[in-house]
Amino acid sequence: MSAALAGQPGVVARVEIDPAAVERDLCRLVLTLVEFLRRLMESQAVRRMEAGTIDAMQAEALGGTLMAAREAVLQLCTRMEIAPESLNLDLGPLGRLI
Image (tube, rainbow, N blue to C red; front, side):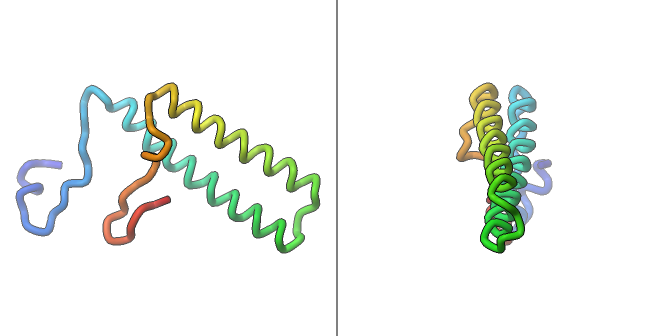
């Protein structure tokens, strides 16, 4: 964010860009979106199981896939030195993404 905007009343600087950490920051953004979608799919899977619209075999396969996706996110966090709990976005007045 430019210095001109940061000094104006009512403007909150939320974006901090560290040129040395662009790759890690971009990875954190992508992993945040992946984690958001994984949680969304997990919620949908639970709703489908409770509604009885998927059978036990489908539920088992879906659960395994979602667990594998979570493990992949955690492995990438480790590789990129990102704390998994930092995978979130501040949406301002709307609150946090996750």
